[in-house]
Length: 610
Image 1 (cartoon, rainbow, N blue to C red):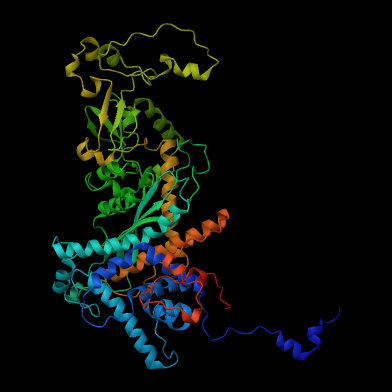
Image 2 (image 1 turned 180 degrees about the vertical axis):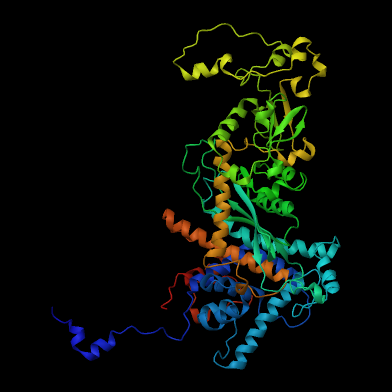
C-alpha cells in the first residue's frame, strides 16, 4: 500500500491539519435581522409599548424595538433570552447595515468602558419597559420582607383600575407576540386542513430565584411566583405556570378506532400563552387564549384538557368554551367517575346524559377506577363501556352558534337503540309490523328490536303504570334542548364524546399527545423555557415578555420546519412597502430613521459570507 502524497510532504500535511475556530464571533445574516424585525413590527406590540412609554421622564437608553429584536436574534441563534447575550449580538454579531437599521450607534467595541456604557443603555431600555407595565414597582434586587412583598403582589390580584389596565396591556403585548406567527401560518395557508381541534395544558416555568423563607420573614425576589404541582408531584416546582393552547388533531373526524393516521396535516403551533401564578385562574386563562383566537376567523372543533380543567367551575371553563363553539373532551378524577348528577331525570354518566333506567351496574362501571386502569383498561371493562352505548341520549342536532344541542330519547326515532315499555306506553308508539329477518345479514339482525336491549322497569310500574306527569321529565317528551349551563354545577363534567369509547380515545389521546409534544419542544430543544438561566431578568413583567418571545421563536422554527417538509420556499415574512422604495439606493446613501422600519427587501436577500 502506497503512502498518500500529502503524507510525504511535511508542509502539505501541516496545511491539512484541522484548525480551531477563530475567536471572532460569527456574523448574523442581514436577512434574518430583517425577518425578525419585520415580524416584531407586524405583531403590533411596538405600538402598545410606545403608547405606554410616551411621556415617561428619564433617559430612554436604546430603542425598545432594538432590544426586542436583539432578544429574538439571540433566542434564534443561541437559545438564550438574556440581556447580556442580546448586547453581545448587537455589538459583535451584526453587520453594519443591520446595526444602522436597528439604530445601534457606532462605538468602540474593543474598549471596555464603551461596551459597559452600551450595555447599560440596553438594560435601561428594558427596565423602562418593565417599569411601565408593572402594576406595583418594587425592588427586584433583594428579597423583601413578607409584608412588603404581599403589598406588591396584591397589585396583581386586585381590581384597582390602573392595575387592571396595566395587566391588560401586558397580556395584550404577550398575545400579539405569540399570535403574529399564527396569523403568518394562516396567511400562508398552512392551517387550511386544520379542523380547529385544540389542546390546553398548564406547564411549569421554573424560576431561578429562591422561594420565600418564612422562618426569616423574607419573600422571594419573584413575589408572584409559587409552587407548580404536576400530576403525582408532591414537592412542586417554584416558578410560574404557563397555559399553552396548541393546534392539535384527532385521528379521524368521526373517531373511527382503526383510522390510524390523524385527520389533518398542519403545523402544531402554540396558539396562545398566559403566564400566571400557579393555581390561579386556570380556567379563565385557558378561555382567554381561545377568545384571543376569535378575531382570526379560525375554525372551532374539539377541545381536550386534563383533569385540572374538569375541576374548574362551570362559569370559569366549560360554559365560556362551549359558547365559543368548542366541543369538550375531558378526563375525570377517581372520585368523579360514574354517575355524576342528573338533569330532567336523565343520569349524567361520565359526562354524557343517559336513560334514567340505565342498569346501575353499567352506570357505575367506572366508579372508583384507578387512573392506571382507565389508561390501559382490560377487555372486560371495554365490553362494559360498549354496553353503555345504547342507553345514552342520542344527538339529534349538533351544537349551534351558542353551543346548544338537541338530544333524543334512545327509544325514540326511526332507529331506536333500546326497547322501552315506558316510551311505548307514554307516546303510544305502534308495534312494528312482523318482518322476515335474514339471519345471515349482521346489519339486519342488529337492527331488529329483539336484538336491542330492553329497558327494565320495576314490578310496581308494570302492574300500576303511573300517569305521564309523574314520570321523569326526560320521559315526557322524546327530545330536549340542552344549553350551556343547563345542568347547573354538573355542567363542568359534561362532554361531547362518550367517555372511554373509541371515539373518545381517538380524540383525547392524540390531542393530549400534541400538548405533551409542544411541552417537550419548548423545554427540550434549542429554546428551553424550563431553564431559568436562559431568562435571567427578574419580575413577572420581564418573565412574561421573555417567555412570549421564546414561544414566538419556537413557532417560527416550527413553521420553517413545516415549509421544508412540504417543499414550500416562499418567504414567511414580507417587508413593509415603505422599505421596498429604498432598494435602488446605494447602501451608503440610505437614510433610515433610528426608530426605523424593517430593512429593505432588496438587502434581505443578500447572503453573509460568514
